[in-house]
Length: 294
Picture 1: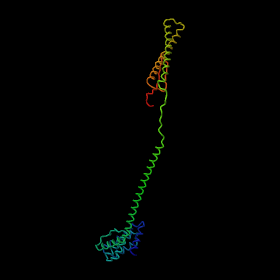
Picture 2: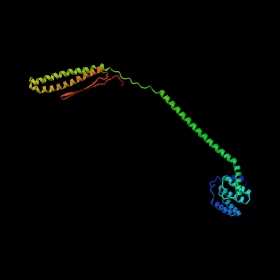
Picture 3: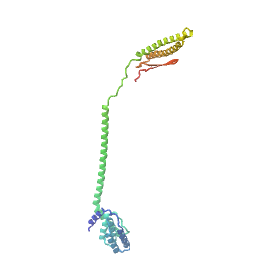
């Protein structure tokens, strides 16, 4: 078998799962061969190496067997066969180290074979390196293209978003302006609480005068004794109502004055009257507009 054929055979063997697993039997034969070699029993060592060839399980076994075979043959002076064996080993592992310490002569033969294999594999190694560099450059270019595509997509999305915001701003309806409700001024409405107050004042005057007359009749004794109780009760009621209407009159007139002087409530004051025993309670609620926005 020529060297090229051996290289091809070893390359095919590398594809098998057991390519780098040295079998136990091969290791046993090689250890025996090393012992015989160190004892200078070269022929017996070659026989053990031949047995190891039979038990070889793949390229790794073949490389180790060929490496030891080259050492033995080189020490026996069979340089051509030694070169062939070394080339077989270095074709599998160009950086393989010799398994035993050897003489400078054997080392020189081994390095010569290594140099020949390196020269022979140079185109293949260069092509392999070029392929690796090409793949690395292709990966870098692909990565750069992907990054550029991502950048352009981000710019496109940003532009779409900006355009949508501009369109939304253009189509947005104008802000609502709430006009304050118009209504009559407080001064124009001030007559209402004034009329209520004056009316209440007149009613209070009449009720208090009537209650005073009844009280005077009871005190002077001019009242009919049979009507005394009725006069007393009706006098109390009229007095209570008189005081209540007096309060209403004060509140109404005061509200009219305030409305006339201060400003413009849009609604008339709310006047509430609560008669109580012995008196009463009156209140008025106003809403004023002093010129500010509502």
